[in-house]
Amino acid sequence: MARKLIVACGSGVATSTTIAEKIKTRFE
Image 1 (tube, helix red, strand yellow):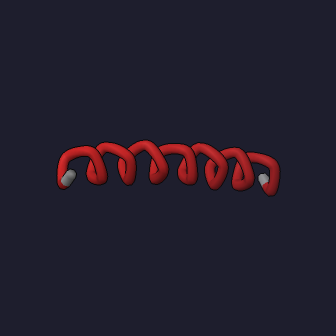
Image 2: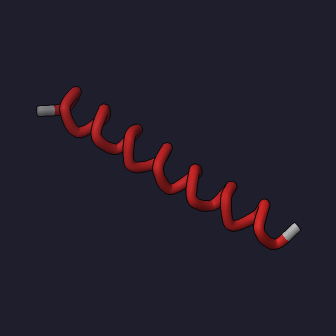
């Protein structure tokens, strides 16, 4: 359970970074 949570957090961070990059390029 804990390991699944860590994996979810890891992928969540990766997704957030990707979205942040898309937003950044869109506003530049």
